[in-house]
Image (cartoon, rainbow, N blue to C red; front, top):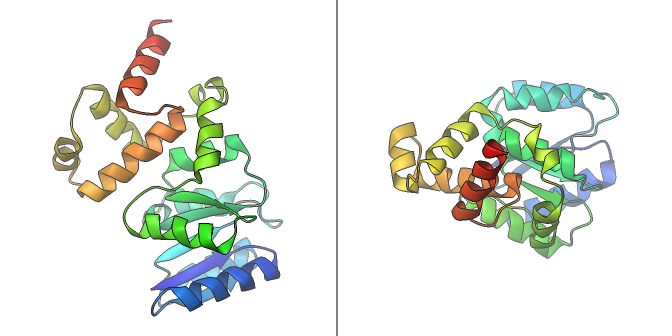
Length: 206
């Protein structure tokens, strides 16, 4: 497993790299301290299987690297890391399809637990932060569209389709659909499918 950590703080990169190298069997970890270095790393072989990305890079104020990842298959293998869990930023990342968010302030046990969930095909946000996202204003979400793929999944959810049916219709694995559904629920700030239907029906009818 090849892992790329993108962060402008060498101490963060080195600490996370050491943790992952010591705990993930066969992991090869490299670090990029800027968006420029990250783009170069993505062009070299072997390409990373997973990317831990700090979206706030000094040489990338317009988040061009993140936009690039959003337009590539790598977005499905990206984990957002940040010292500042800004809700709007996290929602934007969720809508784009990142696999999860892990705060830089998290202790090693939470980092490893979160990554284990992601490797198991799940979407991950620390429980406390997930609750904050659900409780924060839904109007922040309404003006931020989902990615085309997540929008497809949401449309099928609103039609009452099961995960297996969604997977078959969109040619996705069951694990991927489960991950997308979790992402949509957190993004929309709801706990389950019923709440999703009630919320979006209310929004469309208001």
